Length: 307
View 1 (cartoon, rainbow, N blue to C red):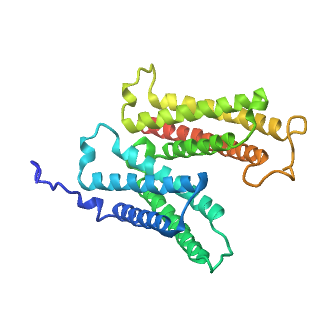
View 2: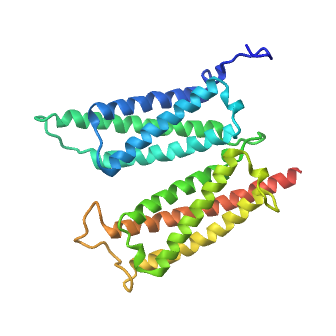
View 3: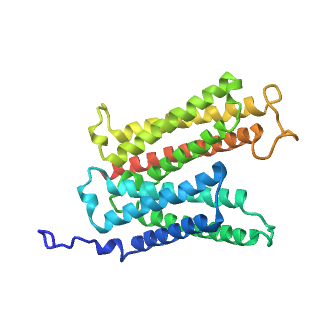
């Protein structure tokens, strides 16, 4: 018992919908890792990425669950609520990506019974199913911890905070496509687009890190941190708008690139495919930043009106 008469262990971390969601995450995560290690298998860069996602999310979830049960977050100099909801959002996105990538590259409709191929396929089907269910488990945690009307929550639990995590994740997808033979170094305007992606990603990660650390008020700024975030979001929207115009022109216009996919382009390593992925997710992030800007203004208006 502690000096105030409370318990050392937090029963609410187990006997609550949030606790049930985290225990389901641990159960499914452990099952996935066991299936992959036993027979499903993984190889190449895509398989390594999927295995990293499952191991990383399982380890982080176990850490979060253990610390919540033992009431240790109160001893840490960080914003625990901001950290957990940001991780839950990130884990949801990572699991969605792994649940798509793994069956695309490792699951085949036909198998050979003579060499045990059908057994491997069945294990991979089980991995895909468990990974898909785990997406919903992490999404449930985001739903349970998100900002609700009339409740005071951390910034990362708001729609704007959750969008910051999605923006950073989408930027990582763009970087992956850029590194996969996108030929961005052929034109100076495409170099500009890479600078836009890198700058916006870096500042977004800094905003998330500062919010999770709980040190926003300690920054040497001459105006509130929330105003800085809104100004940055506005500028990032403009930068992504320019990149969304520049990248397709210098990638698919006949003068600079190829409008259609070349017939002799290999399936797994085609520069045109990488350019298309960059173009699509550039527009996705532009919409995300624009939505973030609108929601940030809405939060600001409500806070001023209530004051």
